[in-house]
Length: 350
Image 1 (cartoon, rainbow, N blue to C red):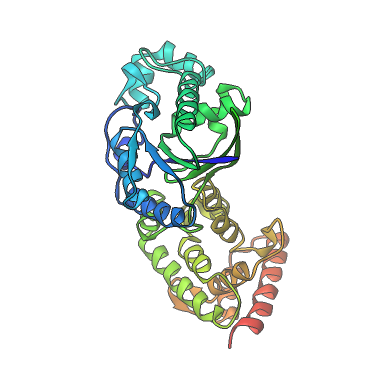
Image 2 (cartoon, rainbow, N blue to C red):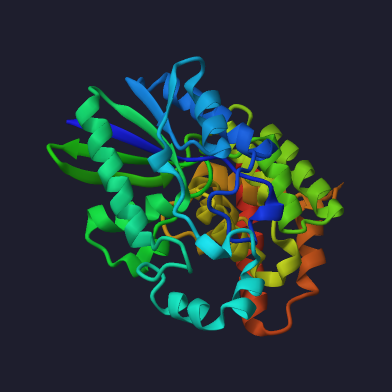
């Protein structure tokens, strides 16, 4: 059995993400290059016989950084599905200029192509042909660096799903989709997973900017992260995971009381499910759907030891939040969370 690791290129500049882009040649941004470096580290432990890439620059740059000196073979047939006349327009502009075509494609996203372009189904069929050719011409495991649209179309084809379900696959920038190959059959084992469990510094800053995390909230998160490291000393925990989760726990703070749920959803979609789990429960450990990890407990406690960036005791912190309790249910929840914080303080605060 052979493996094909299909990599979606790293992140591109945000000015293009609200536009319909396929064959426009775009460079990676700083986050995309960081993602490619993370891929390079991952592939040190997963050797392959060859690296193939779309000819477009965002894929070539990802492949060359990731390949770390190995030869990269250009395969133009791995290019993104072409969007034809819609290339470069914003989706709002497309809706105004081509209202009937836009509406029809919205109803059948996988099978109706833009004017002069390809459908997702056609792109998936093209990728099937090129994958069969690459496998017949090579031996061993392969890396293929391509684009999100054509990869989604191909996944629909090899899994037997309707092409109209292309967006049921979460495939973040810089992610890996692992395919097992037996004979002429392809079997997806893992789809759209990140080579690292946590984002790097450039992506952390990007996320804070994208979700408008206020400066004072960012400073609070850094204080909580430092405190979490202090509390975790001597315990068997994943320090890197805990630190980055603490940095991002209030990512969507401007969204109000539901901010843990919203941040967790953002992080899970970005491919960071372990961080998402910690962020989801940082305000209430009972929100966990499984066993509560040491990392989750430490983040919960560290967050309760600050008001903003000012260190406080557990009692001070909860007296501050008690003012927000407006009914018996919220007061009962407050008492439960206070008791949990006191219990954790006895274990971790030394």
